[in-house]
Structure formats: C-alpha cells, structure tokens
Length: 141
Image (cartoon, rainbow, N blue to C red):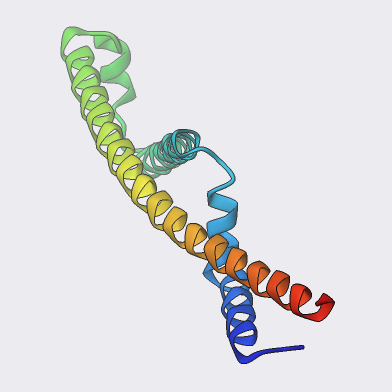
C-alpha cells in the first residue's frame, strides 16, 4: 500500500536522480583525492592546448611582420631573446599554477557539496526501505 510519506520520499529521490543527482552520483564514484587530481589534470591539459592555439594564431597573424633577417643575423638564441623566452615561460608557469590551484579548490568544494547531497539521498533511500520493511511486517502479521 502506498502511503503519503513513501510517495513524498520517492518523488524526492526521483527529482534528485533526474536533476543534480546524476552529476553528484558520477562525481562521488571517485575518491575525493582522485576527483581533484582528475580536474587539475583536465585544467593543465586545457591550459596547454589553449596556449598552443593562441601561439599558433599569433604566429600566423604576425608571420609577415617578423623580422626574419634580424633574427637570422643575431641568432635566435642570443642572451636577450633567451631572457625574454625565460621570462615568458616563468609567467606562463605562474599563471598555470594559479589556474591549477583554483581548479583544485573549486573541485574540492564541488565534491564536498555533492557528497553531502549524496549522503542525504542515501539516508532518504534508507528511510524508504525501512518504511517498506515495516509495511511487510504489518502485512505478514
């Protein structure tokens, strides 16, 4: 027999499973440490891919404006150009570190929020199962 309490719990469970619960359940399949590492790795991969694409676009745009004769005459690996490359690379690494740290904090927070919602979901499911067990005991008695 269906009671109003069981119906409310079933509706709440189905709303959760079809909404935000789908991503929460996927997210909490991993351990927190693994999920944070995966998100950080995705951030690094995206940052590297974006950097390569931007460098290619800038190179294509300025291809005819680059002073190739001067670069060939002075050499690409002069002290000045090496210092410029080192400074750009250091800035790039610092910016990537900031993005990875921010991604780690954000993914930890998301995991914690999802974990709380999944715990509530599992508690509601356990309550529903208890209601069914109590109903079976009443019917068998």
